Length: 465
Image 1 (spheres, one colour):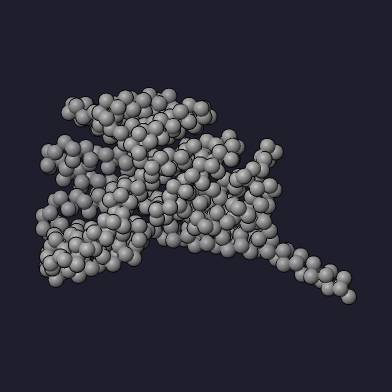
Image 2: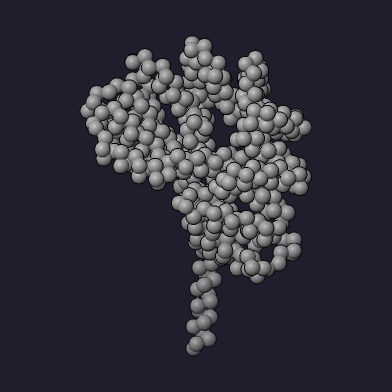
C-alpha cells in the first residue's frame, strides 16, 4: 500500500511536470522556435535554438533525436567545443528518456570528456547529474554515489551554498532510492541545518517533507505527519505554493494509508481549492486522481468513474500521457466493478448491468490506454517512470471473457516489455518462473478451449444430420 501511494505521488509530480512542459513546450512555442529557425544564421545561437527544439520534443523520441542530430551537425561545422558537449548531452537525454540507457551513456560520456578537456565545470556538473540519475534508474548505486561525490566536490569548490545543497540533495535522493533510510535522513538533516543557518524557509519546508517521506516509507506515520505538518507550516510562511500542495498531498496520503478517508479527502480538496484559486484547470484535473483511489477503495464506483471521465474530458488538448493514463484508470474501475464480490454494485448511467458488460468495458479501456503508459519524469527529477502497469488486469479480464488467446498475446507483450526493461535495468517486473507458469497455464487453457469449440461444432454437425 505504501509503495502504491508513493507511486501515485510520483505520478502526480510527473503529470505536473508534463503540464509545465506543455505550457513551456506547447505547440505555440515549437511553432515560434521553428519560425525563428528559418531566420537564424549558421552560428552558435542556431545551435542553441535547435537544441531547445530537441528538448521541446522530449515526449517524441524521433523528433527529439532529429533536432539533436541536426544541432550536432551544425556544431561540428562550427567546431564549437562547448556546443559539442551540450548537444551530446541533449542526445544522451533523448535516449535516456526513452530507456535506451546504453546509448544514453555513450553520449553522456562523450559530453563529459569534452567538458573535462575544456575545464568546463558548469557543464561537467550537468553531465555528471545525468549519469547519477541514469545509474540510479538502473539500480547501479555504486556508480551513482561515485558521480554524486564528484558533483559535490565541484559544488564545494564554488562555496555557493545553494549549489552545495543541491549536491547534498543528490545523495539524499540516491540513499532514499536504495531504501537506506538512515543515510537519507543523515543528508536531510545536513540540509536542514544549512537552511536554518541561512534562514531559507523554502529549503527547510522542502527538506522537512523529504524527512516526512522517509518516515512514511518506514511506516512511522506519526513522525511522518509531524515533519509533513512542519513542512506545510514553513511553506505557507514562505508562500511556496508548490510545496504547500506537495505537503497536503503527503499528509492526505498518510491518512489514506491509515484508512482515515474523510481526513484524506479534506487535504486532497485543499489542493483542488488552491488550483481553483489559481484558475489552473490542468492542475485541477490531476488533483482528481487521489480522489478516484479513495472512491475505488470505498467501492463507490460511480463517483470514481465520474472523476475519471472528468479527467478525460478536461484533457482534450493533446495531453497524450494524461489521456492514456486516465483511460487505463477507467479500465481499472470497470475491472474492479466486474470482479466485485460484495453484491452491492448497482447499474446506473455509467455502470452497465452484468459482469460481462463491465469486463468488456475494462478490456476496451485498457487497450485504448496502451496498457502501460510511459510517463517521462524529466531527467532533472532523476528517474524515468512507469504509469500503473495494467497488464495483469488485462490478462485476467481476457481470461474471464474466455479470450485465452488474447490473454496469451497480452502475456507475451508484457514479457517483451519486461525483457526491454531488464536489458537496461536488471530488475524484471515479472519473474521468469511467474511468466513460465502463467504461459503454461494459458497454453493449456487455449488447447482446452479449442477442443471445446471443436466438440461444439461436431455436435452442431450431428444435429444438422
